[in-house]
Image (cartoon, rainbow, N blue to C red; front, side, top):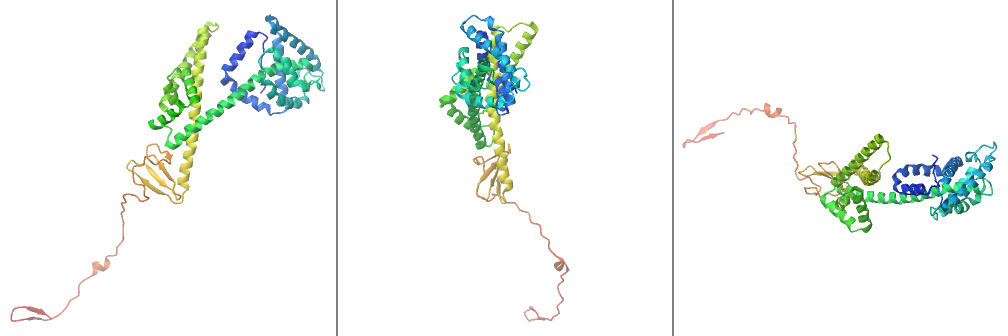
Length: 408
């Protein structure tokens, strides 16, 4: 993707653009992803970027007469040099094609030297147009002799776009640092979910997690920023910060209100065909901060949930793969599986989620089920008993004088 950066000689417009860049990191992030991908591609991608920078310099030239301050004169000189450079650029390439888009073989050389020098030079760029000649010399001077960028005028025009690129590089560094911070928060939240065996934390877990935030200066400061952006109290913001479901519902409601108000403002502006009033502009900015805060909090929770679900698959896979496992069930239906190596995993009866925290089990864990009810079914051959008959016996009975009878 080719990224075009407009630099206006109108200082007020330039200042507004710089401020807008700071306020719109979310909008810039998608372009940054494409920019990072373009950076590793061949020189022909660099050609397109440089072509866009040339266009930006031309656009700036059209605005020169609008300003009367010191910067106007400086920038006018740069544009004059850039226009002179166009004739030299025309001769580049085998066909003498016009513009920066036909740099051809010089593309790879440009790309390599840019990558080498950008990091050193842009870090010192103050954002003033007076810095452009120095940036042109420091960053692109090594290419001047080859004529690849059309002499000093071409270097200056390229540096105008490179200055804007420096701001984006700084923004990229901030985004990377911010992303790493959010990943760490998501990992901490995921561990709390895994330990609890659920993404709905108990009051005890929430209290412990929020205590850590309140006693950590950096985390408390960030939670306060969320509270200010969303228009909620600090306690609710901290609860949302650690993944409390109920607090996140409050956050979602605030973001929904902000989106609704933005839509109303947009519809009203569309019908009136007038520019936004200062009040409307302020409302949009305030609402956008609330929406961005909610999106960030939701992103952390979503990443933590994903890690939790992956860990659930691990727990249940261990149970399924065990050659032998003892299962014990309490009166509530909670089941504890004891694996051959002694690891115990509890499956919650209500949620079906697994955890190594077996404190919720309400039975005795001795490896022996407490109650065994067995029903045994056997088959007996009764034919011998059924067919048995006592045999007849013959004998004599003698009666004594006393009347007793004796069997012989």
